[in-house]
Image 1: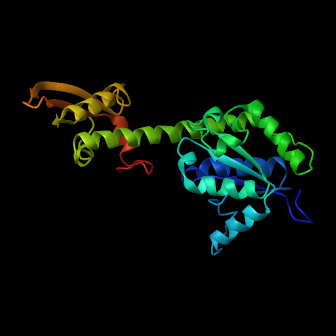
Image 2 (image 1 turned 60 degrees about the vertical axis):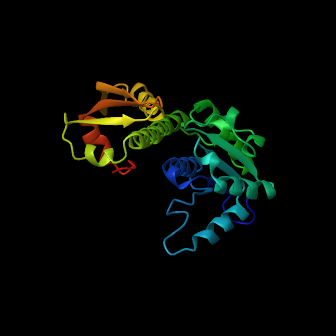
Image 3 (image 1 turned 90 degrees about the vertical axis):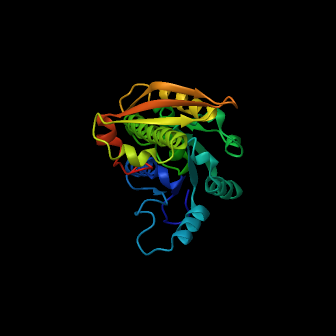
Length: 262
């Protein structure tokens, strides 16, 4: 429990790309405890106001928090800053709780996060237990809160977040097979086609995985083989393909802020 009249502080460690999930957790816990605790989220303007020295605010929150939640995704657990904040909390003896989502399971956490008992964020029953644990830690009665609704909202954020990771990775692969193709695709109308050659055995294997993976349903781009294949003397393969732009690429992908090639 925080000393004096200060509110207990719950620190949520996260990477900036995941500020939506972190802010959702902030709103949930502050509302559940009727504002009796402060939830610190560095990417949220309520935690670090305009003009504040952001590093000082983060350091102060790390030094005074009572509990730390670490938002663990497949991406965030690779970031040094997450391990730094986790280590800071651990050195202070603060309770550190990895909360896993977006491709990261609690059973597959890397060290040092694997040293702490974690949880999977989309489990409403587990969220209820977490709420009880935080309430006990800050010496308050456990509030009533809709953990099922929180789990559902986290799930939607998770799905959207993971989609854009997969989407950008797929278009990275497409660009690697045919450098400059993105500029061409963005100039094509719905139903517009572009025929191109993929040179090299390795590049053709990458392209095959894209056709059978992310682009398999043809809802964003329809990828098909054109007639023509060449095998060079060094056994390198060159094949011709046709890409057809779909409505979803125009409406949802090309101009979206999350799209790497917007």
